[in-house]
Length: 388
Image (cartoon, rainbow, N blue to C red; front, side, top):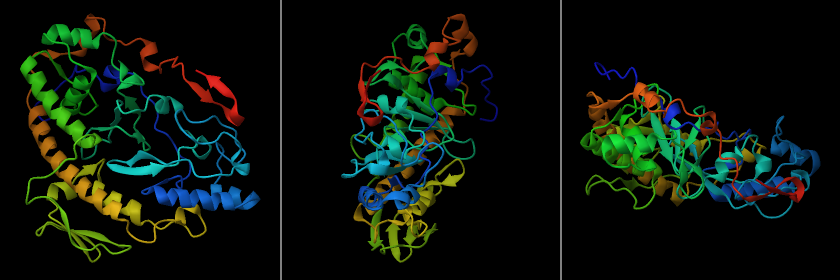
């Protein structure tokens, strides 16, 4: 913020030291906006044989139909060579394919170039994955309960182990905050404060003022609730809730926005009211609603598995669109509150120098690595059992 500097604020990379590169699919077809499409693509792949199956698979240096890999932690995919695979599609799982774009993925290690098993091992209902957004326009931090499948920012899990245990925070940070604040915050409180107070860098100024801390945590918790979309579904006030005013066509080719009328046009279909803050919401300079629409109308190259897609516009997409509009509109309000919050100096600031003096920084190298032992049996290539 102009006039507000935090030259010695701790870096997010030090406050949440363990990070993992995002998974890399290597091919687009194992992910899609609807689960039925993925099952149809799997069936088409397994109906093909020999060179035809290999061509549909879209091999890379990391994956071919003959690659032997272990099963994804918690996944249902096979471990035999895909070239001789048979049977039904592994049940698709929900993932975050792009900012605010929840899609589906076939959880089969044989289909994914770099799955990052260490992320799958800690993915559960308690986990929160944090991503840094490009410093263009939009929020600096994103959070999701789903496994994120986009980059280039590294993924920072809030917890290092399943079940919400062992926070991925600088060792000693919670103890130091407890002394300075007069109360012990939880890991989610630190993440909520970070979501509200983060500055470009990203750096996270900390405060020892209990009232300011609580105000920031409250703002951040609302932002996290909207981004994670867990629990009670968000709603706009009556009269401001978006509805379908004209039916959406089977395959709307275009999307445009009428700012004066607050109407989102999907060809002949109409959705309103759509607040300008929802339409204008960007992450890294990309308009979220436009990117979400493009992912559902893109035509795959003929003859590829990506070309298999719904014949029409599923009702579930309409419901997801209405919820996304709601989330973006409400997040726009929270971002405005956060902008006012970060536009003033942080009182009783806890600097990186203070954390170094207290021994919280620098973090030990072990804190930047995943937890080493999870006592979880996992199936290796060709059905071999591995114990981590």
